[in-house]
Length: 261
Length: 258
Image (cartoon, rainbow over all chains, first blue to last red; front, side):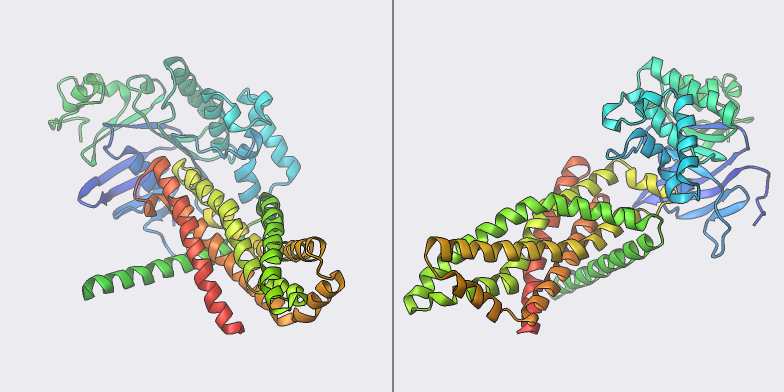
């Protein structure tokens, strides 16, 4: 299938998901262009993580379509071509406690690719070195600091050379200095590895420094989509209200022309 | 009343179907994965090493107690020479498979349910899925197949230690002739008894490791509370249901073999 209606790497059309009576996603439309970092912002409980999980298939959406790299991944086709390389970085890092940092990073290569032991070791050691984790290679996640665990999770997300990486609140639980460290890391490795990223983050406005596009998810819909610089002009809108209130007390937004959807 | 009973029965059938599907898909997905032998050996090592000390200890003491109780019962009828037969048959047919399985569930099964529950809560299972690794095939399949080896092997160890324990109390402590004790053991134990014991061990292995895996893996759906409480609930229920299943399955299998 190469029938993605646009040249977006990721396209979501009218995605819906409800948990009982709670309509979390109510027709979400979003496009992510190759090589960009798109950040989804919104109040807690507005379904940002649900959106990411629905895109990668961890949650089954109720309706809509998800297109990844020209392939429709939801609803699934019977003889769907192999999914393009994508990876997911979890809020909790989701590292395996019984595996060392090296083994955690090597896991997807060992289980999914046909690379030999030596090639895997070479690749993982290279990443460990670039992430300044060489000394931590044989240590278990429980023996690492929060920042180091984050970097191990990041290395694991990058080790398969994905075209798109999904980040679910990658800076949760980190102090301000480490938050900037993680954002710098994403920006740096995006330059080096050239991946596309879709982020969910609460760190406003810090996250804008690495974002090419921002999408505001509110009441189950994307209500704003545009460049971070566009947001500054929207002072009278509900989005600005949301930003001013530090994303805790966003109200139902007023519609306006231009960038608000 | 009838409606409630019907709903309960339907729920039970649905659960049983889901459980069976989980076991089958875990096994098949595991068989399609790479480095199967390595994963299986690691699971055997985990289950075997974790349980061997307790199996040795409980097996020996079960035999010691059986020897003691058996002797004082048989001596009333002047049949203390049948002690070897009594101890070995009780152990090989019944107590060995049942007690060994209960010990393995207590030791390895509860740990397995907790481990999978924590991995579920910590999104490690989701992480496997996003990496393109089928999670139940990776985490559950090797353990299920390891149970097929570990349960019979540990049951055999339990039986042997138990029979030796019976010898220690019967012959060394209470002066039953050692030659008679061992002769009665070899005379009375038939291949059918050994086969029956192993069939039980295999069945208990699949059922209990299946239940523990199923409970832990589905902590997010089956437990009534999230987080740590959910994990502890999953582990408790896994052990309780496994123990009940062992006794129920024991009755069914015994009725076939007698």
